[in-house]
Length: 465
Image (cartoon, rainbow, N blue to C red):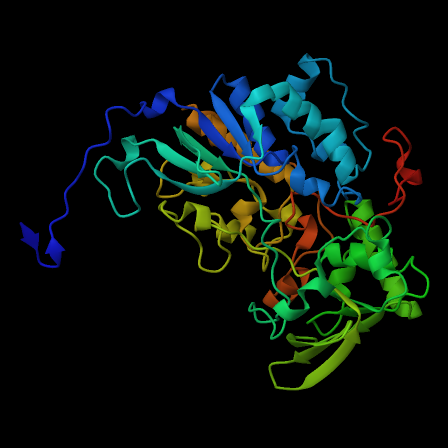
């Protein structure tokens, strides 16, 4: 029989060979700090789970900025359930007031946690798509009873009772173009453009030393790179931002509750004032023209006025954005502006909040019309630059409690966050923060990369003392 637009749809029943959802594991995507925190909470509640990590180690994205020291001390960087599991296994926590580097975050916390979780953490397992077994996004009848289908890049498929997506945003950096579109010619100069936080003083030094470097962006990852470049002699530095001045990028200074973050802005301001770093304001990247080993970066502001900067390398510290493509067959309710859930968006809006003023939130605010699917961590924030690790850990705790059916615990969300010295009050200011106070990388608060110190040394001898 045919319907008005072709053959009538036929509702198929889920295969009787498929396992019942309650008998399946929870799949956690990503073995970064928040993904492993979710795994720790699942382990505490005796819920079966598997963690799928695309990289070859726990914290693979963190490893890419391992040379950078974070703003927040260890006491903000360790999840409570993870701490309990590790300490029961004989682990000793690092100095609570020490500011770890990304590498220390992995070596002293993430790697031991992943080792403890054993073969339930699968490395080199890149998720390419998530759906419901036997259901595309359109089909409704019986949908909630169908297991999730997770397909990996190698073609392997897994079934799950629920999915916690902590895959982050590091693999999807924002473009250089000021309107959210790639600048004209951006792809042609890709070999001369690095995204946020290159190891300027280490493995990437030869790419920068003695060359004119343009840093685009006004967030803390831009400041981190600028301060590192300033230590290279005979290396001209230009810093381009869209705002009319850099006051917001300099932050709260001595008023910042995280001293390392305040020191970052203070030192950057000093370099600009001294002339070591040339600041160009009102710069809206529009076109990139390659000329041999140099590039001309042309700004065109909303009035049509143009200005040009010629450089030899570009660091695009313009932030990150979430990629929801793997969940294209799921029913997501995303905020039109931020790309977070619609319920979460007003709580994290960078026009009104910094990372320290985001109110507590959990499973209710992170839920989608697709029951059992939650994005947590920096991916849950979409384009909002207000994420803190401690926030992600509380998200993970709440979501796991909800999956365990403990809604009282799921809804008892609490956060104790440091006040921030950088609070956005307008869209322009928020855009200039870009990656913002937590960089949108893996929940770390990035500071200037200086020589590493041992984890037991006093803070005064560290990079941010």
